[in-house]
Length: 294
Image 1: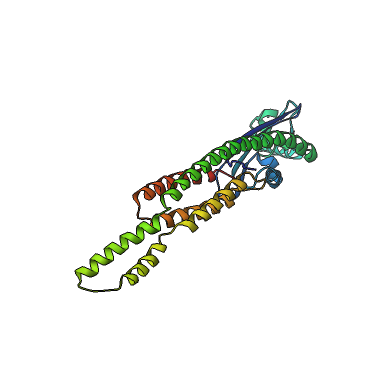
Image 2 (image 1 turned 60 degrees about the vertical axis):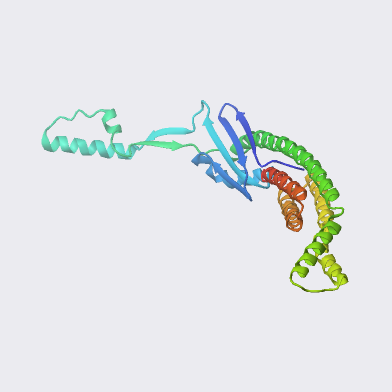
């Protein structure tokens, strides 16, 4: 299946205690790179989130944002250190006794001393947190995957259309190269004969024909045409496949470029050269699309 590496998904879970929001977005990348931004209190779930995402994607740079808001029931408890308060009070009373100064100590004054007031977080229910997070993740990652598949379907349609253009261009090349060996051979014979006459050399005509035939055979592009058409079939089959296909398609495209470059270097016909330029433009457009495929 052709799946795009670009996608976005969002999911939420809300109850009386927890409000989870999970967002996932991805862009192109050579491998799967997952980054998670989340509250410190649930940082222990980072690896679990990464492993969960791997069920939905195999390539791309994925950023996951997890937001947790607590409900009306607070998970933080305020308390004070009774023994420390007594010690502070006794010290203040001693100072008053020694100096004779009246301190008129109030409770709010004692509360301002260091470490008297303590904020204690209640121990969270990890299984409950995980259950709530799972619900938000499933929603986010499912919509994330669906968007990537939808984008991938559009990419597949575009690539298949361009494959038809490639086939049309190669039909032109095939027609233009039907008599290319004979034409090339005749040109070579004429040039060789003229050059040898100018040099005052007499060489058997049959020898000239043989040499021209050998050189003309090098201009034959039949093998390249056959291989390129085979690559088009492979590209179509791959884009219709069920596995992750991006890397394989990239390799096939490299081989297609190789065949086109060979045809361009062999041909001396301006018409074929023009078609080769058009082919390279189409292959570059396909390459750009393949960069987006998982």
